[in-house]
Amino acid sequence: MKWQWRSIGLVWAFAVVCSVLTGALAAPGHSIVWIGLSLAGCTIGTLSIQLATGQKEGYVHRVTVSLVGVVVVLAAATGIFALAGLL
Image: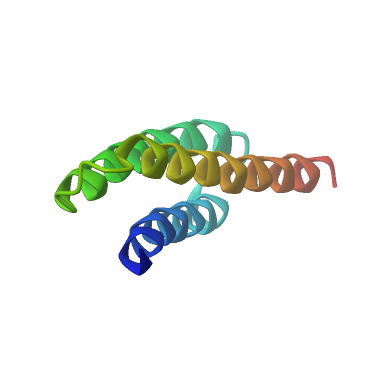
């Protein structure tokens, strides 16, 4: 059970890293493009990590929880970027 949350947390951490890198390195006005690419990378990473566990039981649940967390992290980052763009 513990390994399931580690595999999910790993993807969430990757989303946080992608958000920070997007904020630090993206040109002004282009952060939304990089957030979209981050979502694509996190989706591929999620599927890869969950397949690598080799566990059939709960696969859909783990993928769903991983991707919902990624969307929440990236949505929060998008909101922060939008607010920063207004200032």
